[in-house]
Amino acid sequence: MFQPDLLKGKRILVTGGGTGLGRSMTHRFLELGANVVICGRREDVLKQTVDELAKETGGEIEAVGCDVRIPDAVEAMMDTIWAKRPLDILVNNAAGQILAQTHKLSTRAIDAVLGIVLHGSAYCTVAAGRRWIDAGLRDRVVMSILTVSSLTGAPFTVPSSMAKAGVLAMTKSLAVEWGPKGIRTCAIVPGPFPTEGAWSRLMPKERGGNEELVKTIPLRRVGEHEELANLAAFLVSDGAAYINGDAVVIDGGKMLQSGGGGASTQAMLDWTDEQWEALRPKRK
Ligand code: NAP
Image 1 (cartoon, rainbow, N blue to C red):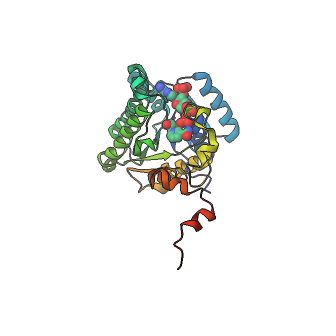
Image 2 (tube, helix red, strand yellow; image 1 turned 30 degrees about the horizontal axis):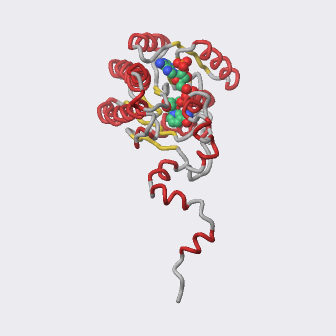
Image 3 (cartoon, rainbow, N blue to C red; image 1 turned 60 degrees about the vertical axis):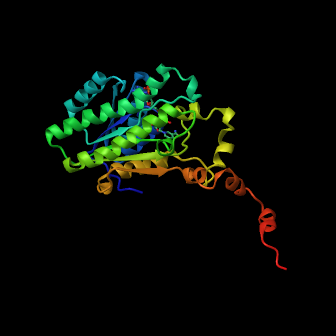
């Protein structure tokens, strides 16, 4: 699909790159010649991913333990990364998520989600951006992984929706502020992509599992990691150099189906031909 050296020479940090979609993006970036640093809190998970992906792709990958909620930890991580070579691309992917009734959330739970997604993305973005701008480095990219709820809102995941909407605002604001300095921003808005992390917390079997879910997606299936990883590789590559401040939705059309027509029209998607025939005006 891409030239095998599409990302050759690019040094990329993927926050939360040890698991799930972050791991899949890292895999693709390595295959395309990038040098990738992943971070997260669990060093054993990072180590395992580094070992596996180095073996699977033959690419250059390293890990730095970091809790992105802690400003000093983010600065220390950036110093460690810069000591070898400056980053070209930052991918804000780390996230936390809680499925709960909003009026029952503790302030600690709210702070935890806002801390990882909103503050963590801002700390990483500012730490990288400041280093790029101070050194006059251009052709740099910040890409953030959002959620559909950042555009529409969503019940029962309110702190995450708030935080991701904030990261979207950061993406659009910095496109204008940092564009003239040679730093562009973009985002991916994923629909449902099964992972062991966010996914398993958000899709407990009580919600009806995949069978119920796929009925809400026009393409009648969930996303493949490779599909998201390919979009990510394109957006951070020089081929997408004129994309700045945009958020690309990759959800099989789910957002449009949930948004348009309301529940009564949705039910019509399952109508039989006989039901549609009964609706036709009868000739006299
Ligand atoms: P995941 O496997 O749970 O990945 C989250 C990653 O973030 C983990 O590697 C985790 O590692 C890291 N992380 C969490 N807190 C952190 C912290 N304080 N500091 C540093 N790293 C931290 O979830 P996923 O499904 O792959 O989600 C990846 C991204 O896609 C997220 O931004 C999510 O919102 C977005 N997304 C996913 C879906 C989906 O269907 N899967 C849909 C829409 C959007 P540690 O726990 O070791 O720190």
